[in-house]
Length: 72
Image 1 (cartoon, helix red, strand yellow):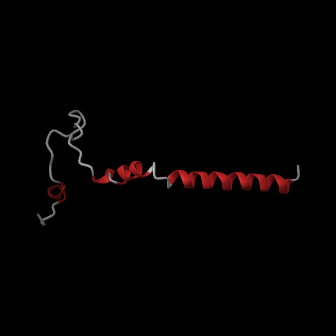
Image 2: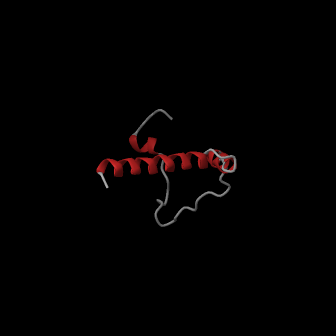
Image 3: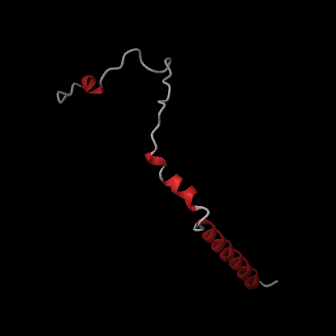
């Protein structure tokens, strides 16, 4: 098999794969899944992540007071 023929076959396979993925991504069956994924940033999180008592400081101090900033 010639190198040019091999490269042509690889190119043909990649074009067919690209067209297949394109059709899959834009099919009407996938639209509800993509709409749900698009709205994920706007979803409310009802639960707050638990804070680990061992890693958090005993008292939290506003960082502006630590630096001496007067703009409060």
